[in-house]
Image 1 (cartoon, rainbow, N blue to C red):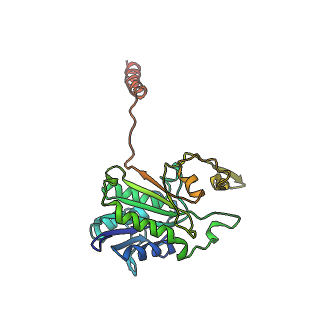
Image 2 (cartoon, rainbow, N blue to C red):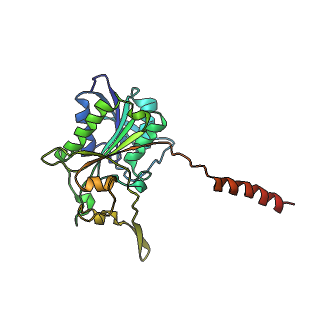
Image 3 (tube, rainbow, N blue to C red):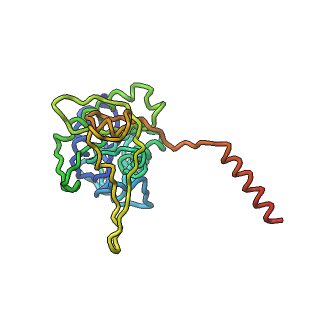
Length: 268
């Protein structure tokens, strides 16, 4: 990794989170890192964007009273030097599956960078969930060692290849560190979706039951998916594209043609 490499670092957990500090310290050993991150937790905000946001200097860089997408736009257009790459993370909690891609602030920061035509990596830490509420699960700097190692490796080596000619960004999900480094598996986002809702008087409780079946012995996600890879102790890397592609089809063309004919006939 060259000392001249410029990295814009952001996240959605907030600038004071343990994960962004761990990633900042690891990347700063061999690159110039500019942090532009939300002042507060912005988890699951997707690509929400603001018209104006307050910004203030922080010991790591800049704290923005806005979303990860706000931070990427502000960092690329105004606050930082032109970066070679945008890195988002390291998120506490995995970002796995197709349905998460538009919901996660971490992923959304990488997507926003893609619209600027800047390569991006989004890194998240898979934290197994038991009966303890997720907000009460404590992760320290040592828990991010595997995540920071693989992210640093990708930042150092990926730009030297043609990888980002084919992928706009990488969604990287990493298990907690073990005694041995985890192997990498190139994956596709799982298609599994188990959101539900339960009414309790005037309150609707939204639930994501997908996390209830992460046991590697019984997980239903097929081989090759991000969720199975991480549950079984491997690092998942999904190379993804943005903006979203369109799929032209003769059926839709026929519907468009019949619409005009139907409306024209009704006006006669």
